[in-house]
Image (cartoon, rainbow, N blue to C red; front, top):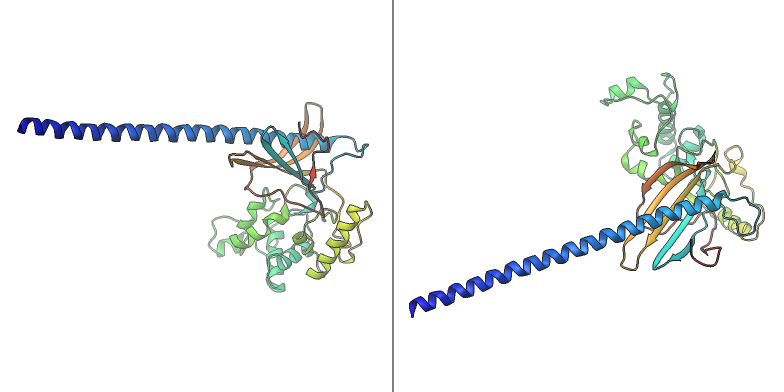
Length: 312
């Protein structure tokens, strides 16, 4: 009887162990299946977003001879590709302030209007930005060259050349990561324009124009939205005299592909049209973007696919 009891207990333990092992195996296989399915969804969304960027570039490059032509004006467009929802928006790069070509007064206005610095601090930081990007070692009254960086304990000095990326702004002496992050969405290194395009510039960019108030900018945006909707010239902004430019031949495109299972992929790209037949556009920036709705610029409104089919 004792041996029978021991055998029964052993059999029960063996059953429990086999059950645990089987459950663990089943859970592992289920997790791997979910992981594989998620990887497939991500790959599908990535391919769709990349394809959407290419479609936008094609549409923007078409001759402006038809009523349904696409413009880099920030208008959000959405269409369906099977069960995938595609959302895109494109804006010309002159909607942002170019770190390498913006005049001092525009940088100063940005640091005050968006960065929240007082006038003296903004002036000092603007001069440090200029000292970073100029080719000489001459120090502006509030600027910083190699000696000032060394005195501050930095192991590097100013580039004495153009900013290669907006992220490089963080390396400028006295620039903080928080301030650089606040300014990032208003800046570019790709437009090569001294001014900004008033037709497509965002509210934050417009707030960088010296001598303007938030109330004046809000009123201008409202008037601009009405003008764009009615295909009329945009109103004047007297404070922007000498600080405005036309559209840059560079496009910032954002494409978001979303699947019903919740998987979403965002592609951010900056493209420059090219005259080379085998290379119609050149990618200046190509990166995964943060998940959010595509930005709306310059009074743009959401619009369905102009072809009406929703298919590429």
